[in-house]
Length: 164
Image 1 (spheres, one colour):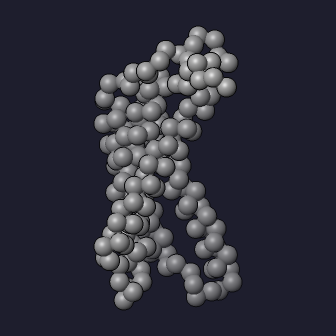
Image 2: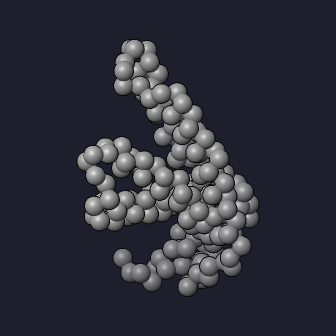
Image 3: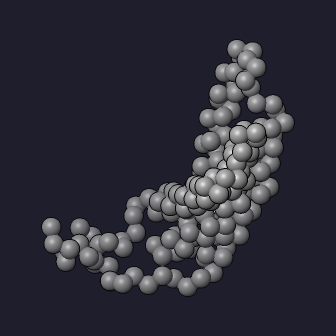
């Protein structure tokens, strides 16, 4: 297929714009977390003496990288013509952590029912909720605000009036 046929449809806003922008923002957050952890692991920061250090670093990096997630999702949302930055910030801050915590809670209920010693203490679960609501969500909102303040990204080619 010739690229000249589709060049006017490349930057057309998708039907599920909010979902795409949210997932792209979360993808940036996860990718940056992975890269930072990879760099620190390569520099030998994680010792076998402290087995939980890696998990702690992953959670801290993920939470602190809420600003790039919000920034990226808001910039993309604005490029697609979105106007409500609070809506995209809310979906970006809720989507991934809620799924992760829901799965964790479901597994914890199964472990509690079987009276297992592998359960996470309730205080740890509450600490994860506090990290989500008190640190991650505000950082995503800050990033979305900063991203939405920037000027709209100009598409390099005009969008066709009639979709394919």
